Length: 325
Image 1 (cartoon, rainbow, N blue to C red):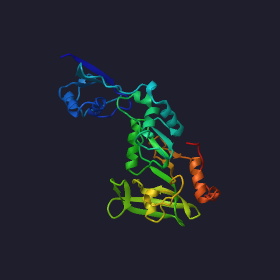
Image 2: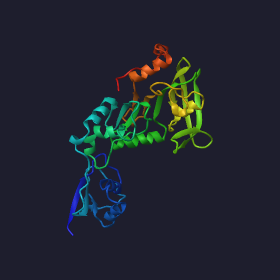
Image 3: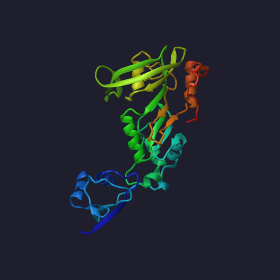
Image 4: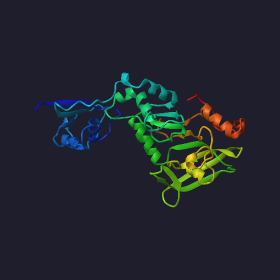
């Protein structure tokens, strides 16, 4: 049987990965047994030497895969010319800060983080050239904002950035501050401490005795017309944390029908205003990024709190309008 050798070069965003994971990504259309057989038969070589799946790669290494001539060559990435230009422009318009390792965008309300036409799809279009330099790395959002939640969202621009941010997130070293329009009168700062559980059938979160700890520090900024604009500092990051914690205290977000909020035209207003990373994550000094509110959000707040609500904000409150999304 005739054989052919396919060669690939390890780029910076492939370095440090296990070789078997790279091979699996290259031949996604093949069963796992195909990958195992390649290593078992000695058909995978790294830098000219036979390698096993646990071997870690280094930038510049050449991977050689010996296959029968009928096996198709994997289509690594679309060329930049094939990238969806409209998606790239949309993503570019959202960028607040871009470094070699991380991009922080101002996600508009109404767009999914993951899924059809979501931020992950737009990021792939924007980073088409970067992806073409890698065998398997795919830029993607590193945490999640609900479809109708807006604000600061971190997206990986390199493997190093993805690993560093994810590790800091697991260790509680990423700080996130939100603005929320509560449907009720909150007259003093509070610490919300709850145990939350997630129902995957109904896609809702509830408070109870079993689940995971959820901690938020809440500070009222403006109180008017039976509503409160609050600044919320998250100590944990559970799904729907702010929404369910507010609802359990009779302060469901105005317009949040899923958790019993009063009707509001345009839905609820929940916005990640500020994202802070520690030194070494995103840049040597870390990042401190603020995401402006859109004119639509400012209009919604004006309708609920009165047109002069901004004049009532405490001095130094980071609140400003941005471009139209």
